[in-house]
Image 1 (cartoon, rainbow, N blue to C red):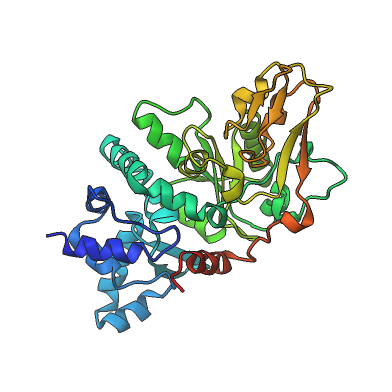
Image 2 (image 1 turned 180 degrees about the horizontal axis):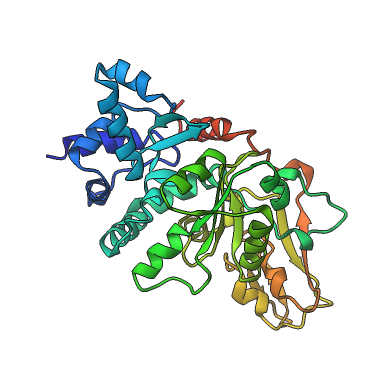
Length: 354
């Protein structure tokens, strides 16, 4: 009965973070919620390598018009990706995350939100944690970085935005999921960005709105002030950038459950607190998404480096100039993949798929 959905699950498990099976089979129920059997079967004919409708029709020995209609329908349902480059359309299969899950943002209801919550708890959180460093990376609240250390362009929000002519802001899928379930935080929801062809996909499917660089910078600044962590994809040329919280974000949530988050996150910075300036107000403790700060025996804030991910949001609430964001030693810094293709190859190698 579940043959096509089982095959689809196996296929999705080879993409990006994967899509592991659970004892309860909740992942099959998620696929049934998203796909009908016909769409699931058609998805199996595609790969992440983008193709034109003509090529796909020729390969499947089907009429081009029939295939075009099918591809457009599935693209509008958020079941496949469509790249629109100067009117030239290409289509491809997508992973569960980032992809199928987030592309359902307009169809997200309480049932789907509950299925996702169950799936994360039963297995997907572990899967996220295992590849978190190659999925999203943490970039710091820049103005708090020690000025003697120059920020690399791929860690500079402004420089990242300069690289694209299409900037689209959309609702945070994770925060929306939690709200539908009656939980989550009260932070602003329209805080995630898509760039380039991914941004155009969001526009074409009415999942976001185009903004200027100046508007995007303000959204990021406001997000960071509210305690959100800025996380672009782990690529020097990311297709998206999220602003996440430890309460709602699937990635940060998975990282937070690890005993030593600093070990599994992609970050080139860490925080420290000046014991001379700290007054023990606990503001930084309350806002830290990783619960990495505690009061020591002297009643002053102290950073647990095993839990610190170097986001810098704690500094947005420190009025005593006690907080400092430090660059890691060169030997401890990580190199960022040049592009999304290299990122996916590195993820596949880490998971033992190639």
